[in-house]
Amino acid sequence: MTPPILRHLSDLRAKHATWIRAGESVAVVPTMGALHAGHLSLVEAACADCDRVIVTIFVNPRQFNNAADLASYPRTEHDDAKKLVGFGVDVIYVPDGGQIYPEGYATNISVTGLTDVLEGEFRFGHFDGVATVVAKLFLQTGAHRAYFGQKDFQQLMVVKRMARDLDIPIEVIGCPTVRETSGLAMSSRNLRLSAEGLERAAKLYPIMQQVAARLAGGESFAPLADEARIKLQAAGFNDIEYFDLRCEEHLQLLDRPTRPARLLVAAWMDGIRLIDNIAVDVLGN
Ligand code: AMP
Image 1 (cartoon, protein in one colour):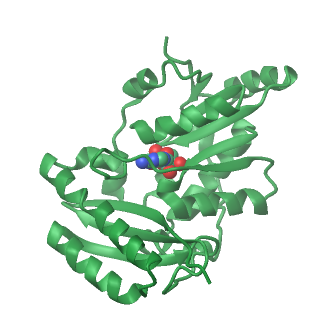
Image 2: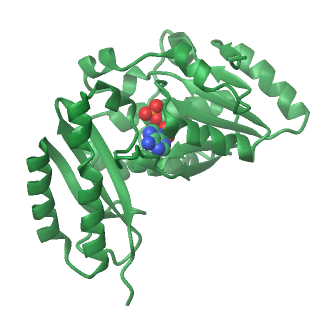
């Protein structure tokens, strides 16, 4: 049996009240649907940690800065519900648009600083949309714990900061990126790539791994990045928006991983924008 789908906040709140009365812990896994094994790894972690699990599916118009991207985003609710069978998910919350942005909705949540760079630079307004919808989902679900993927590393940092700054009593947990056997990070956007595009896109991960290994060997980032950009172009990535080494905490640029750091990339393959990131070993003294 697929988990029940709730579309109204009042129904979700009624369920939540019974769980809280019973002293149960509640987890939320926010998604935009088109579920794949990456999402399911979050669901698995949530079910292992908490008594009750809510998976949300909402394609949030406010976080798309491109109308065509929003229109073509895959919507596969029926299949998504089937994929959630067997994990122990209690509720799939698929809010009607009006549950999130009712008539006259006027509030925006904006996290400054962390959002000036990377995705924030190339997708204007994206993180306001993310912070706003995630704050609403935290408050609507009343969850104790929320599960996010490190695949969207900057998003994870932004969501953590938002919850902390607004005193929302929730623990935000980052889970490792799930990859195809080819190494390509799983993404709902991969569905839009051809078989050949998928093969070429899979070259991204080994290129990132090579750079990370050489950084760990003490090389400085700038020449490695130049080399990597040439390799990515040769693989068919025609627009590399960023290929950066940044510290994990503040997302400041680094030339060497002298503190916890990530290599973060956004690049276009066959008209599809792909992002990925990996941790880099910190250099010893
Ligand atoms: P999305 O539906 O793309 O908004 O993603 C919903 C959640 O799934 C976010 O927390 C993502 O970071 C996470 N996610 C997406 N792809 C992956 C992946 N390959 N591995 C782990 N988590 C992922």
